[in-house]
Amino acid sequence: MGEVQEAKRQAAMPNAVWPVKLKILKAFALRDPIVLGVDIIEGTLRTGTPVGVVKTDKETGKREIVTLGKITSIELNHKPIDVVKRTQIGAGAAVKIERASYQSAKLYGRHFDDKDDVVSLITRQSIDTLKTSFRDQVDMADWALIKKMKIEQGVQ
Image 1 (spheres, rainbow, N blue to C red):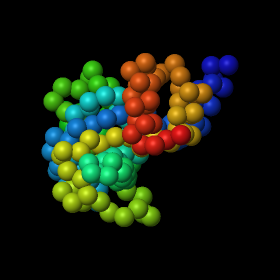
Image 2 (image 1 turned 180 degrees about the vertical axis):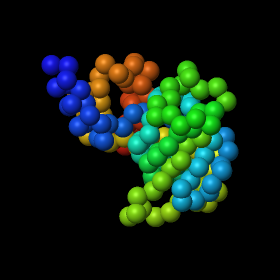
Image 3 (image 1 turned 135 degrees about the vertical axis):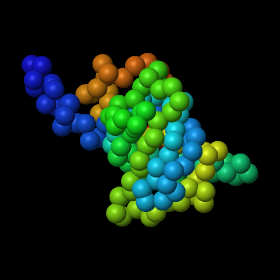
């Protein structure tokens, strides 16, 4: 049974988006691929997570989601790593964000800057995947973050 469950998890892994909220400390490469020094505010940072910036217009209250791409690599103390929890991080991590070929290039300083928080872009499907396949790996703080992100990003 354990092998079957692990096989199901591996099949569901591309659809699972782990919640994370990052603060930008420094930008190393401004465009294609974007390389940022970040600090984890909440959640779990993993490679393969689609990330973006949620901007809210103060006057109209209208939300705009700027899609940056997927995190393709994470470095902690100059060592590549796949998963970083908030408790592991000290001085911050470097993340490389690559966009898909169909996405337009985003530029640090024009489309987003260090005042914006970088968040994982969740969908209804990704939340359902976490519930069904990875419920035991997601802690209560991450579920609370998912609830907040659903409201921020307008996920039904």
